[in-house]
Image 1 (cartoon, rainbow, N blue to C red):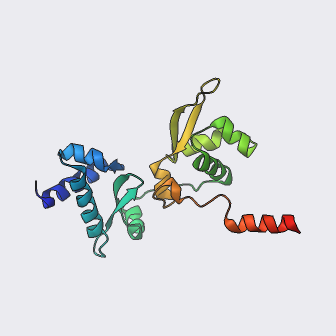
Image 2 (cartoon, rainbow, N blue to C red):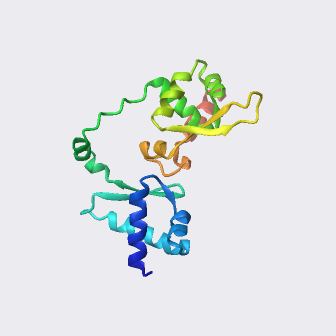
Image 3 (cartoon, rainbow, N blue to C red):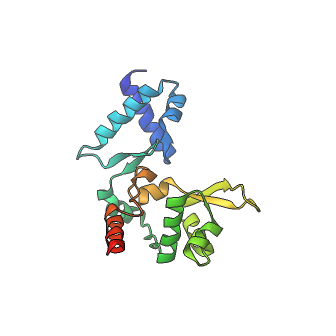
Length: 182
């Protein structure tokens, strides 16, 4: 299989998969070394970065996903006649923040941090696909734990959780130190 055929096969698989997929799974599917697939992915990303392309190739942590460019969102929305997603309320955003920075976490942990019942917020985040079950914790009762998803990364424009802003910035710490010294 030459490089053009590998690129075409990878592109077809990304399109068909719709969801993010790792380079090693793509390599297994085409029965080629991962390095060949990664080279094809980089070629595709470069091709899609051109101005005359309506697509882009997202690199989400260790996985790749074929997507449409954000600049065409309005056209696509009109074409599909999609209803606008209801934005997250403050309670759901708070719960999502607790999960993103502390994952995997139980509902009890979220409620302990927030100080209020978070059942409806967690349910809403699950329905929107922003979080998912991450198994059960090794605690009494074996509670379900939650973590963020690739949908979360896409919605917030992150490549990985490492891109989350710090909880406390250096300025915050400097200000606290100065106030304590006064």
